[in-house]
Image (cartoon, rainbow, N blue to C red):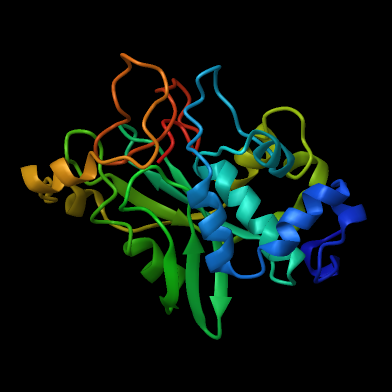
Length: 245
């Protein structure tokens, strides 16, 4: 079934969720409430290994990193009659991607974002295009050395293209959902010449960016990367959510 043929409101039976699981999503009736829920649950530091949790797993574990939060937010939006749209933000190979859930108010775009630091959070629906929205993350999207690394953004990806079993109730890592999203057409934000001229963030900016909302629970481990504040350990794969954003 195509996204256009899907029902406007996601039904519990279609999603495959239990009544209690669906009730939680039903209570999150606005983007602000969805964002508040994601802010309240801890960051997923992936202490037991790499994860891409489904909506059900986020509800069960009550923790998430960026793509997990985006899947959860998109599902909650769908329950309330809004399309479950997500956007993939890609970056220089030295850094890690990020994913946000999208919503519209009139002709303007906003974003719901699960992140462990201050810069890459919720965006009010005041942006006239997805490019404009993506650019709102540009200055703060940096690696631990203060280099600005955001390079492109994807078209809006409608999760109704995928069976709910792949991203709503999946008991395993939602790798296929991630790969489909990462494979969507991307649009460049800067040229390679632009990238070579970018200034690094100054020391004060880097110091402020080192603040995290949910510190790592295990004593002795270093904090997440200073500027991006992703919440899981470094990985070899550059999956969205790696080190958490």
